[in-house]
Image 1: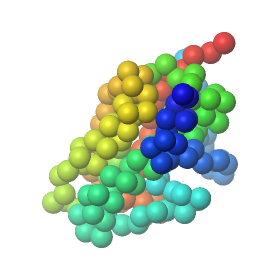
Image 2: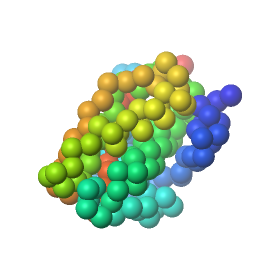
Image 3: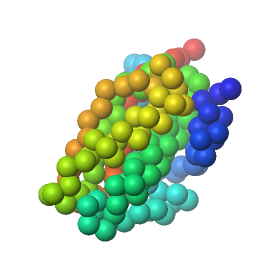
Image 4: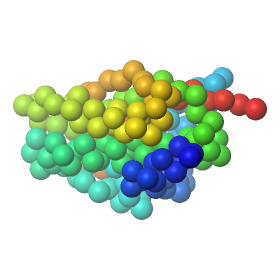
Length: 153
């Protein structure tokens, strides 16, 4: 079973992407791909908007983080042709727009870490950071970026 099939088995489908930004969706240097931050967009529309601990619940933020992570994986697939060329998820960064009182940013990103390990096994084990911020672009409650090691022919 491929990584993409594993992902679909968990209810996630990699979206098609077009880069309309002035920066790259992902940049490869050597065997590493640095994927730019992604929001929880489904068919180009934010699934959630707001601030975690105010208008967005912990559970909604966790769902948003997983969607944003899947969007990051779509960039890897678009660059490599397949997720199966991934050797390791090196690092995951999660930015959580939250109230000053909300301190569960790691709990938001724990769901991404679990999903990465469920889909990729040992390849999915990674280092991570979870940061709180006052706001994020377009009102998204969560933004995720990843670094992956890939195999080239």
